[in-house]
Length: 258
Image (cartoon, rainbow, N blue to C red; front, side):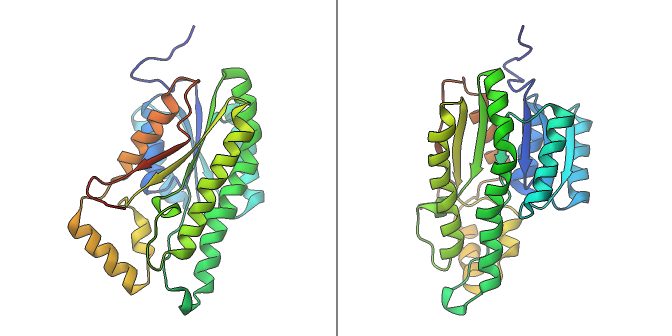
């Protein structure tokens, strides 16, 4: 008999969250644990992960901490092997690690280009490659599994100096559509989550002065989304009946026009 309840619809599920040391990832890990999931939290910063894990455990949740860099395929695979061995495999993957470094292309910030592509595109694929077999196996048993990729409204909209970041997010959205075709028949739901402006550490990483001014102006004209808003959206997607797949979800601040 199922132990799920309306208050804890994710009891019995194993969720892996990347980029879980702060921002959207940390908030989602805590929220999914509150909904009953066992959460495996993955990021590079061990101390930050320990703090997230401590908060979850204080509220009665169960966590597995995985220190890994998504750009290192071997390390990610080792993390996936731990999830399989210690938790029996993942049936919910929130592929969330990302980096935003806008700058004019003519300035040739090639190191920033490479870092964004490595994390936002190659890192996403490393995680998918490591965990897809677990999702498929779990879906075969449970009747459903979830792969949720964090994209952005930048995947479809135009923002000056965001060309490379936007290109990586367009990749994530289009990738998600293709994976839905491949995996949907195997009961793995695939969703691209496209937030507007969310107040996280991403803004603090921006070095381009023009982009910093644009973000500061946006902050004055609207209330940005919080990481908890995105966490609630992820929880909603994962708790839907197995027959329902929200393949693309855009979440915007009310006053953000595009």
